Image (cartoon, rainbow, N blue to C red; front, side, top):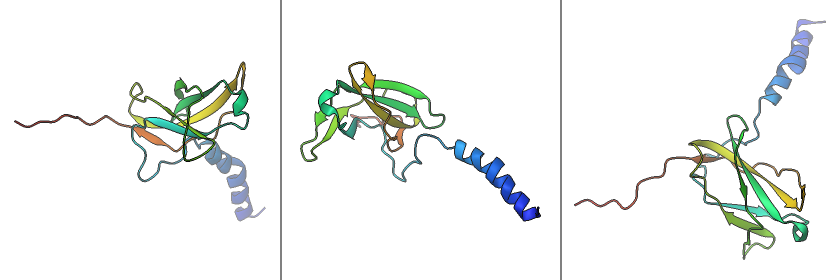
Length: 134
């Protein structure tokens, strides 16, 4: 084997799988990420008539750890986009950092596979309000 072939083989069998496995669930953060989100929007399941609830997992971007699980019920239909739903969420209890979310539908005791992850968003300290200078 030539040195080049050995190097290519080493890359394909040793290095490349490590690069692929090192990827996390959350996608790269947008240049202008959502900060402290207050709602989740999704397209309903094709079996929505049988769904009893939608469950949202908040996932820490650094290690793919589920930090919080929220039961969103069936959500509220979004008027101008048929088939889309939304629900309020509260991210105040979680630590500052980067997160994404995955969702699944539940129908009685059965649950779907997780959705693809949402965009990566940021939990930051909220700014002050009601400032008055006297």
